[in-house]
View 1: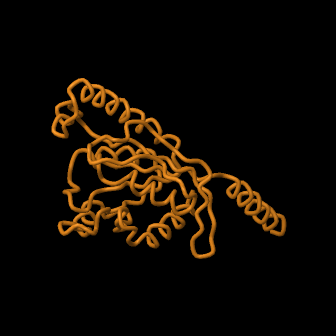
View 2: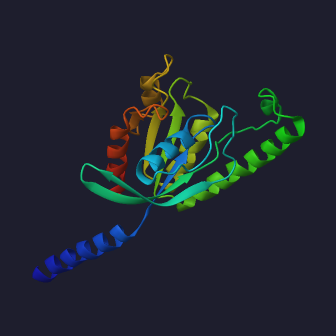
View 3: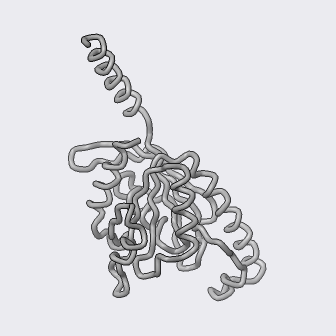
Length: 213
């Protein structure tokens, strides 16, 4: 009995030692223009003074995985170090004509579409390396679509801890309850990455999920 107690004691000590040395890989996933990069930028800027990537009204501004190492987040006296990974927007279909609506020239539009398609493939591959995934959804859009189902399906298969962020709660059409109804098995946090609203709940949820990895 005594030996078992000591074994458990040392097991906890060593697991805590190695856990503290590990940077938690935190991935931002979601459809295009939901605010993944805006949220990642907000977090990185708050704790490192630097952003992770550029944002634009044009879909698929982020077309390759980008990351920032050693982002140390301090919240309510707790401290954790994350590797922040911002991924291209997931889409089931990417047509170069979608970019023409934003006055992008045809040649550039075709190149963007090609890069965005490759970015989706890259994003899915990166899932195998994630510790936690934040799914960023536009709270003013309908959450019941093939893209969101595809993302959730990939995460369920890999058993990765998930937090769903309902972004853009500052918009009049925002409806967090609709997102909660669509994904009742996950915690949903409503925020505005643009204005920095309700990030406290976001950080609290991330720290809570980190305990399970």
